[in-house]
Structure formats: C-alpha cells, structure tokens
Amino acid sequence: MPVRLQVMQRNRRSMVDIEVIAPNLKRKYSGVTSTVAALLPIQERELRIATVGPRLPLDWPQVGAMDVLWNIRSPIKGRPFRIWHARRNGEMLAGVVLKWMSGKKLKLVFTSAAQREHTRWTRSLIQRMDAVIAVSPEAASYLKVPCTVISHGVDTSKFHPSSDRVQEWKAGGMPGRYGIGIFGRVRAQKGTDRFVDAMCALLPKYPDFTAVIVGSIKPEEIAFVADLKARAAAAGVASRIVFLGELPMEEVRAWLRRVIVNVSPQRWEGFGLLPLEAGASATTTVATRVGAAPRLIVNGETGYLVDMDDMESLQARLDELMASPDATIAMGIAAHRHVLAGFSIERESAAIGAVYDGLWQQSLSLPPQPPCHTPLSASAY
Image (cartoon, rainbow, N blue to C red; front, side, top):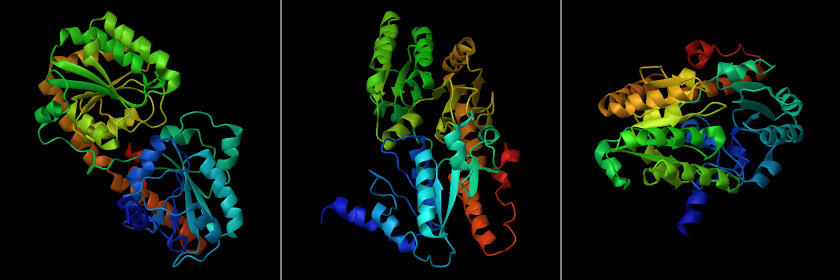
C-alpha cells in the first residue's frame, strides 16, 4: 500500500468515537488553519478529537464528511453530546445545520479573533452558539454575547531557538551575517511595503544584514510586489531584499530561527501569532500596536512596539537593533523566556478543554467548572 494511503488510514477516525470536531472548511492555508494544526495534536492527548474539511494534511486526526452526516445522531461514549468547535462563519453555519440534524446531540463553540464590528449575519450566527471564546480582550469587546478570553499559544516543540544561529543562517544560503525578516502573505495589510521602505533606508548602513520576505504572493498582488522590487532597485539594495515566496511550514520555522529580527508592521490584525512564534524561536520582534501584539510583547524587553502609522519610529527601532546585533540576540532570548512562561500551546488547550467541560457538566445539571481557565483570561494580560 502506498505510504500516503497508509498515513491517511492511520489518522482517519470513526465518527462514533469522536467527542469533539474542530472543522477546517477553508481550502486555503490561513491563520485559522495554523491554529487548528497547532492545537489538534495537543488536544488529542486528552480528547477524542478530529477535524473535517477539504485538502486536510494527512497527519491530522480527521473524519470524513459523509461519516459526520451519517453519524451525527449516533451516541457518544461517556458524553451526552458532541462539540463542534467553529472558527469561521461557514463553520458556524455548518454547525447550526448539523445541530438541527443531530437531535440535540451537538453543541456549538465559536472562537473569535476579529477586532471589528461583526456583520449582522455573523452576529446572528454567534447568537446561536452554546459557548463563545475570544482570543483577546479586544476581540471580546466586539462580541455582544458572554465569552471566555483565551489567548492563543505556540507549540514550543516546533518553534524553538537554533542550537547554532550562525550555522543556521549559513544553511539558508543568504549573504551577510545576520537576517531580518517579515513573514506572512505579501500585501499592504501585512505592511510589506513598510518593511521594504525601512530596508531601503537601513541596509546601505548595515552591510552584514540581508532582508528576507517569506510569504505567498497572490495574483492580485503582482503589481504591488513589482513596485516593491522597483523601490529596492532604486535604493541599490535589490540583491539584499529577497522574496522567498510561500514555503513549507518547516522552512518558515527555520527562517524564524535564522533571522535575528522579525518585523510585523501590520496595518490591522485579528490576533497575530508571529510575535509568539518569533519569540519561541528566540527572535526579537518589532510590531505595530495592532491585534494582540501589545499583549504579547514586553516593550523594550522582548521587542518593540510602535504606533500603527509611526513609520519613523519603526525605522528608528530597526536601526537600533541592526546597530547592535548582540543586544538584539539577547532581547530574543528574553522573548523566548517570556513565551515559555505564559504562552504555551498546552495552556491554550487546557483552557479550551475547560470550556468543553463546562458545557458537558451543564447538561448533567452539575455545578459549572471552577474558572481554571482564568490564567488565560483577560486578567492574565
């Protein structure tokens, strides 16, 4: 039997054994996909959990769509009902339909990361959820229903420091001694243009640095990228601002270890995992004050925060870090300690598990679960 089929069969679960379904119904890779991928192996240690959706990675525990439909009313060993944990509108809608089909054998959980007013359609779906999670107090402020605040975490077994940063950088095949990078889809929302403008100004001062841009380039961004390359050429640094494109996650993690500075100059963001992923990799981050960045970075200790449109401060902070690589590396080590202390994926998984337990206990007319998840609530920030 081909290896691919062996892996698929090994990770395929039977719906009758599953107590939690965490759907991933979007074909394109996104931040939500990254969240599901990080949590599933941790949650599977304590729960009978699987995902469902198109084009899933083979190593994810998963159930087939038809299996879900045929067995949504089936009894669940040791549980009064299953839980469907949605993270997108389409997944909430699918959950509402499945709940109707299940005959009260399904409860719905939704996690919200958005820091904006929800549309009427989204609000109507959220109101149908049995429990709601917000990834930050800011996201919670836009919800019109009770919710639990649980910060995202990062898998520190996958995102970790390099044992030899010098050799790691050399393995990337780039010139110079140090790297500075931006990660995520190449577009204005992520601030790629801001990063390029800062590099055009700073790279001539620091010949030991090379800038890397890691992320997909969609057809609609081709003109945007052409303009960025023209700016780099005009500044004489075209060969030192390298577009690496979309890479496998293993390579993305390697580049986070290789660079000594991660730049996250987003114009807006729902949550933004990169400060955590960079910190877990012992890499210093300079970020705009959007999304959850102000709650993930200790300004001046584990990285720097700048106002969303203050590009002078962004360039000044990058100038400071590039001028003192040893101090920058030391700040990255402090970021690593900070992530280990408060933002592990295990803490996130435990807090989500407490939400599930609360739903199951309510159905048995037992007292609600004590607030064991408060270390990841708003007070923890």
